[in-house]
Length: 203
Picture 1 (cartoon, rainbow, N blue to C red):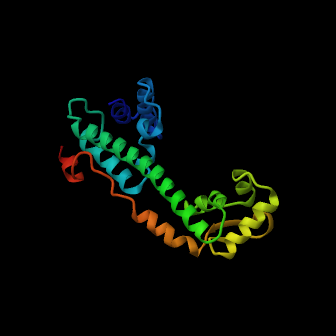
Picture 2 (picture 1 turned 90 degrees about the vertical axis):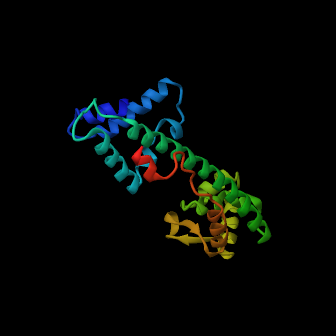
Picture 3 (picture 1 turned 30 degrees about the vertical axis):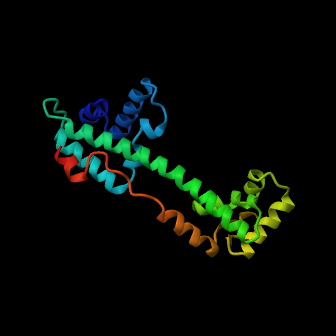
């Protein structure tokens, strides 16, 4: 309600939505609900279709200006659903990382690699750039060990080099695709806490 009231009063020329969401997070923080997956819906709202739905529900509930006489059930349901789905998103991220770690370890060892190479393979799986110095630090290796491991992962197509010299980094190679597809297909659809989206909007 703090979020809705501030965004509809619209006290600034710009940034009203961001400030209203920050105020909402402050309200949750005062109730000791500090983890971002529970106190904020910013990440969830950042996706295109969710951003559109956000502005749509604001229009349906609040009209063009602050209207305290209008019902807010639709708005509250929208926000609770958003918090629920953002928490599910955080949970899915943890579960996928866990499955990816196990699957990559098994596949890497079967290909003759040491288990420690997962410290390089997992970031590549998650579409991050892998750098030799970071892998060396994460796996607690000497520079020579890290170079040998990276070279072997490239030879086996687990990693693909990009760039030259000091700017070189590594991304997922062709050998990682089967593991990537297997782990991603294991993800279950998000559960709708209030039935279908259509019924949520009618509520």
